[in-house]
Image (cartoon, rainbow, N blue to C red):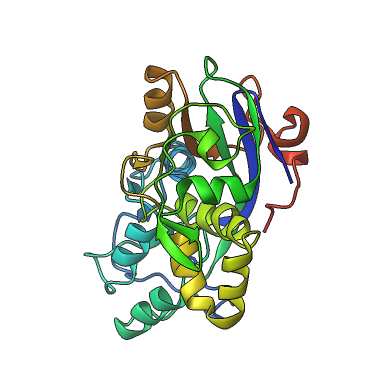
Length: 287
């Protein structure tokens, strides 16, 4: 498919925004709080969920007269790590997440006595790949995203370090602008969704990577998920607003990967497939 980028592109992910002791795909039959004696509810995790969780905490405190919940923005991975560290007052009651819990995280919870877990899906988020308004408009495919941002790409009979410096090094139809993409770090659920839905799917279009997937799926994922560390991809932190501000300050040829909130009015050009909003921008990147 093609991403129509005037200033931004929205791509759906259906990685659930999960709240309250969340993340397992099958629900426990008797969910229970990690610490019944804990006076204040503590939620930690996704920066995407953070503003929603904060608003809920404030509303509940205002309507009940109780103390507001403690809400921390650590990233999905960071939230699960802390949540699965153990039970009691030193660990959060709620793991806010923008993806499902991984098996390794589930196993860590079980090993540390965090066994009564329930997942509650509260919504869906969308990934936006955007360029600055002042930058050139161009169409791009997932394969081109992979070839621009993967640390290693197929070359000859093997793989070599990706040295593409400008977009037109990836495809002649793309502009002669330096490849720079700002995005979330590895602890982010948005980053997980991006490498799965954009990088993996793009890699599958490259014959050498398609063959690798058939013979060694783990090796395929390792290559598809590993982003460049030479300045083409820049980890810009968990805060979506900071990534937006960074892009706006560096107004040429820069890309960002951020959340598009359901109901949010897209900026000029945001929203895939003809500037549609999240609710109706269903396309091949949906999961």
